[in-house]
Each structure stands twice: as C-alpha cells, then as structure tokens.
Length: 100
Image 1 (cartoon, one colour):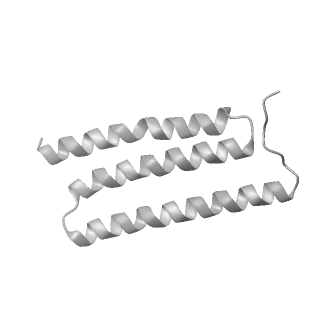
Image 2 (cartoon, one colour; image 1 turned 90 degrees about the horizontal axis):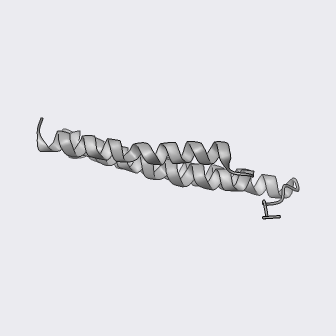
C-alpha cells in the first residue's frame, strides 16, 4: 500500500462521520430548518473529504479539475436548493422551532 493509498483511505474514513452526522440530523432535529442546515453542512464537508481522497488517486490535472468542479457545483446546488426550500417553507407559514 502506497502513501497516497493510505492518505486516501484516511480521508475516506474521515468523511464517514460527517455523512452519519448529516443523516442523524435529518432524522432527529425538530424542524425543517435545522434538518436542512445539518444535512447541507455535513454532506458538503463529507463530499469535500471524498473529493480530496479521490484527488490523491487522480491520474492527471484534468481529473483533479473535474473533481473540484463537481464539488463546487454540488456545493452551489445544495446551498441554492436548501435556500429555496427554506424560503418556500417560510412563505407557507412554517415557523422555525423554538425551545419551549
């Protein structure tokens, strides 16, 4: 096993807790807004770690550029969709959760 394989493995394993945390946030948080926040933040960071792991395995700079572009597009799309969902929910009268 080479050093790049080891680094990739560590990065992939580091991504796992973020995906688990995002999933738990989606299932456990009390309202739509908290769930959106947990899901978008955790999944974007987890995907960033996966992209970083794949960059170590890339064979050329073009592959690296494609990976980074894909990550950037997912970041932008995730933030945009989360914003649209939250804005629609607010317009429909869904109020953010408050502690009793």
